[in-house]
Length: 290
Ligand SMILES: O=P(O)(O)OC[C@H]1O[C@@H](O)[C@H](O)[C@@H](O)[C@@H]1O
Image (cartoon, rainbow, N blue to C red):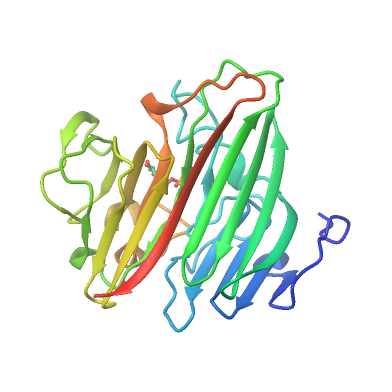
């Protein structure tokens, strides 16, 4: 894929260069924070706020071949999640994370940050994705139905954020108390979250809540908040050791240093979009000392 034909003007704090596997990626090294975003999937694989430590986890075994989804970072699940509402859609988590996106614009922002805009149109859906890199990370996705086939299919989306943690077993996740969830490990729906969530085994839950979630991580001495915007759901996922062993692009020990907290609109909250209608979903990630 040519990156030069569509290349926008870049601020001096950014560069569009070949990354791992020779794949084109935008590097941002701005006063307020640094980041790396691959055009394959418009996939953010790293974000570090100024003076801080990396907040986003990407697997050391992640595949960068411009075809497979990248393990870690923020995969964009769209326009369906998993196998979709019907349960038979492929590829898993939709085509957003495995499509080449166009880099539309890159701009410096007041406060020392950078905003990058990505676009993709496919199967009657025009997707726009904004990544705001600074002391906070802002991700904002809009999916507009342009017509075409598939107009009856309900649309889902998730910002499948892999957070880097010091030790997942020591992490406490607050903000989901009282929310109902589908437990995808046991298949049980209508479960209720009592108290903060602790990760003690394979975890795969779709919460009927988009309330802000705060993850306290004593091993890294920090608190990371995931603040959904327009998110009716929050998905929490950790494959644990057995799940990690089954994934060729995740090292066996890496489950302990990640936790996915995903702002999402999925399942019962999927939306049917008439031509011209949009679904908007965002997330803001902030970091504070414990
Ligand atoms: O391996 P994938 O396709 O990236 O998916 C990882 C996980 O993503 C989560 O969001 C899903 O809830 C899980 O069921 C799934 O296993």
